[in-house]
Length: 335
Image (cartoon, rainbow, N blue to C red; front, side, top):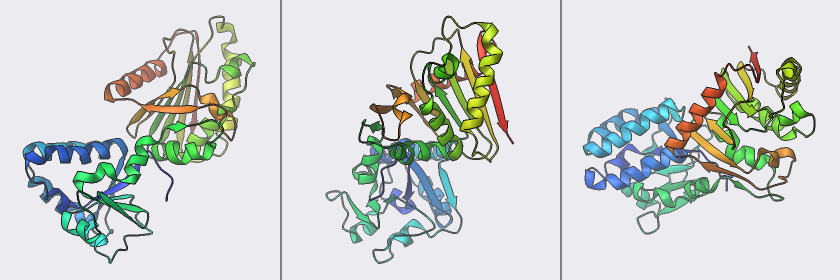
């Protein structure tokens, strides 16, 4: 079985939506739409594009609006994969039990009742797994093992988890689709400024994000300065940050913008990570768990609701745009 991932490709047969045509079925549509919003990359073959529009037009108004809003949102979040030459979902599921395609990875297929029954799936069985892909119907998407596993991604116990597991299940799926990532941690670069502690976790995290994010993306590293920090030290500390970035970004070749803002006057107390691909998280308790190849402390990412995600973004933007004199500010552009 593939390693669980916080985001996973989901393909929906448009005809599956027409199995639930009225607004009496709104809760079923909401379950699929909510799953896509939380954990989905909607895989849309070109052969299904027009059929999807026709299927949506035939739904009740409330259900149709749910789908239209989510599809637009996924497009904006870079989580709508339109594949002009790909086989339709229905045809792929009718291939004599073989749904594998080397070119199009899909972890969850949402099928019509008729096609699902050919694979032994109904409301009672809930799902089947074929070639490492789950086949469900809209009313049972929450029972897909891949979806269940995605909901559980984010808890990484000390002594049992390697950095690679954090990358493969959590960081890479989000970062590879993000044009922007923001790290907020009052102490993330404190070791560089004070010279009293290690920054291995920060170096590894920045390097991992830089090696994963797409071209023309931006990374913000936002933190805090200690009370006894003096403006006279600013140029020297900015030089240390420049050295840190040179070391962390050494393998990055695609265009990228990196901003470091460390403020003496800020209300930042906790740790967060925000991804433009649609997720923002509390980080418990500390990024320093990533200082070693095997995590030396428990690490947990707790997903924000939309309101908290917006607050985190606003906090980050306020720090990025701050012009107070008591700050360390470095911008690096890779072109």
